[in-house]
Image: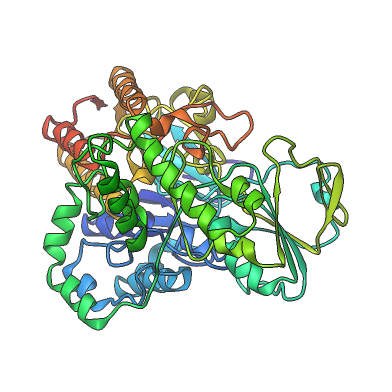
Length: 537
């Protein structure tokens, strides 16, 4: 419907999806299957979401490739063949493009379209979205598929704009690549993207200075090409593998052992840790069932990894600084290729800024410890405003004109991580309050999308024009999620799980820690009860 002042009419749809990553693409596919006229609005120039933007050197998934894929289409599973145990960004992006081509998704995606506002029209029970360029779109239903790790976090260091060389953020890496050969490079941050990129950058740069605020635990990936026989075996038993993964808290088919680390003799415990280290990857924390619940049990794993670091890094002081002192697993466990060994290179230097923070960015480098560390280029590996950042960067206004960022001023509150009270007809895929980042994102995305699609089909059958989470149901879910988080050691340290990496962000443990099976059971029960906890008109 057209507005005054010469504004063009808004394009009308049944549903609008924001984001064309794996969540947005599958959401479009499902809504098409329901016969709903749908448009996807995507800020980037093509599909892929996280894997479109994160092109930093060494970018790689920490879930094994044969499990990091869609499972909704059996033929798709069989026709795509992964080449490495842990797929790199180019291969994952190629997979996203393959999916877009196979299902002809791009014809309903508007690329280069960044949403600025999303406002709920109460009289019409419809959402109106407007882009920064003034384009307008209206639909009954709106699905935010923005990704949990898509809003880059760039700390406001004093003098940041004064630096005379180029600066890069790992989450917004130039698509044409960057030539750092022969340059002095400063890397700020030692989270997952830094741990992946530092070994690659060190081989290219003349000198690499790494500024570390918090040391991180990392397990070797032992990445390798996949043998054709292994791939054929996986494809032959995909249904079994997927079904077993669905019973795992992480949604990943890992080797979990329901044994206590503390009840296991020390020599047997160490043997198991060694086996997991040699295997590599995230299954390390699946060694024993009490690692994330008992501090003494956790310490056995943490001490093991710290000893490994001391054995890899030649310089004792550097090894000491690289060894984390916090609980293993309370921050996201990283998976690397040669990270700790990189600090044995003569051209790599570690600067610890945990107690004496970076003072400023200077025109010629980084100031810390009362001196300037020269740099020709700076890489900000400073992560993301996780889970809520991408949503809050859009001016989302629900019933009564209330802004989402105001509703979440004291931390995000959702019902099931799927909807927000006061914001009718709005859904979030893997939003705060869902397992999301604590799980394999692909099956979590599919579960969310399937639930939303089935919900919209049910609303259509009922003739519903408005659906909204009841505040009481939301309060109960938030309380349950909080109580569940308090049982785990994951909630005890400063991490991006609680927003600790973003100044001023409320400290709330954002993902649901109860595990994927329990979460699916709850979502299914809500649907089976006719969408209990929702007010439907």
